[in-house]
Amino acid sequence: MRSRKIVFAGGGTAGHIQPALAVARLWKKTYPADQIVFLGTSSGLETKLVPAAGFDLELITRVRIPRSLSFDLVKVPGSLRRSVGQSKNVLKDADLLFGFGGYVCAPAYLAARSLKVPIVIHEANAQPGWANRLGARYTDALAVGSPVTHGPFAQALITGLPLRDDITSLLTAHHSADENTWNALRVKAKRDLGIHSGNKVVLVFGGSQGSQAINSVIENTQKLIKEKPITIVHSVGAENDLPASDDTYISFSYIEDMATAYLASDLVIARSGAITCSEVGALGKYALFIPLPIGNGEQSVNADHLVEMGRARVLEQSSFTASWLLDNIDSMLATSDQLSDLPHFGDLEAAAKIVALAEHQLSTGER
Image 1 (cartoon, rainbow, N blue to C red):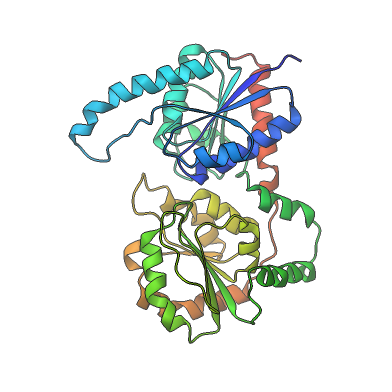
Image 2: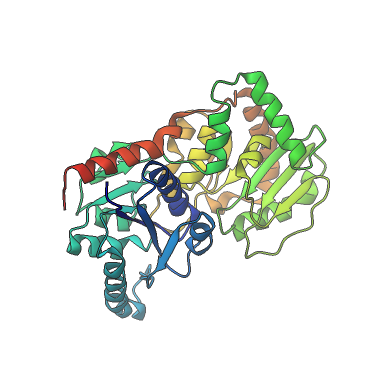
């Protein structure tokens, strides 16, 4: 088989990049002769995560779409034309484009359409983003992490969501482990984080960039929570000041080993991004989700299935205050205690299902 060029588009946040990387790794393992190239913009996390994973990255101009009527709207056509032209330069000899959402995808889809490059799209969120809705006009090869109720993605292949490498490795290594084994792994995870007390562990993070709103509530609650048998493990975001750690509060700019952090936790407090919801579900955790109050509303519905299962609670950011957290943290930890946190393995096959969909797309010769 000749060497092919496979292009991946998905950038901005880890929610778009991590699933793309998982599929790219599996594709490279299955087809080692193929060339893999990522499309991204200079402002996204892809500039760090993609090179670190060993893949080539080509940058295009980011198309900024204003969220309200403003003079910036007149700049959109020009930046879009530049981005599409730059995408064409990368895609002109490509055999396939994978799209995972984010700003980089819209010009990539338009370029692929004009060049008749086959497209495969994976949508992680329960409510598809605008870029993927655009791309869905140009391909029937659609996959979703969870069922979508209307629009073209309602007919998409339900694949689940590809997990981070560390979580995939953990689940694969302990696929047949019993509850005693998982309890031992949780104890070890707490020790690895430097937690040697019998405290309950609350893992807090606000996405790959952190959240000022969540950080502020934790800061205002921290001194009062010290009176409780609780240790907070807090990822504040790389751009934010790192608070001092102590016996009941451990801070990180960014947690690289999320598998260990999840394992150690008794309660997760986080944004309800699709990746986070999938990880919480896969590792059998209980979570309080604070949806991002901007965007197209996808975070408000991403956790619905976990809420229905009794594994999550969703609270609007405006209601998430220090007093609310102090009033409710004990009851949430009690709810977590009542649940078995054995993992779920459904998403382990997500990357393989997306690869299979792409193989079918290539075999049909559709362009």
